[in-house]
Image (cartoon, rainbow, N blue to C red):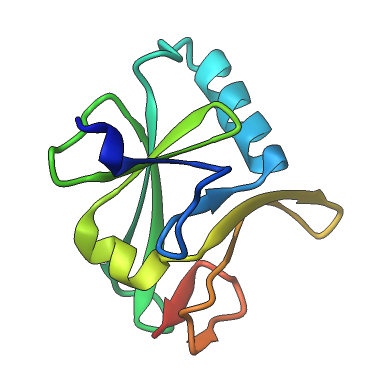
Amino acid sequence: MSDTATTTSETAAPSAVFLSESAAREVRSIVQQQELDAEKIRLRVGVKGGGCSGFSYLLDLTETQKETDEVFEQHGIKIIVDPKSLLYLGGTTIDFKDEIMGRGFVFQNPNATSSCGCGSSFSA
């Protein structure tokens, strides 16, 4: 992995994927609960066809990183995104909400032209 593929929060490009501090806290909590090796774990962010609006968001904890993956680091969490997903996710911020009406990761995607009521799918 080259240094040019890594983007930190201080030098984040518009095509980066951003992670809020609360989302990073939740990822660290999940890693700890599942007793995973925090040094090896990456948060894979992606999209797949489907969902009520055309595309669905994907979040996965993995140790597998491909050479073609873009790598970003936010709040101590390494985020990996495949190039195809990054076309739809560039500039997206992932937040975590824990509210009375629901708890979960929330995507704020500037590329989405519409999204469904559940917030887990979008069209671009």
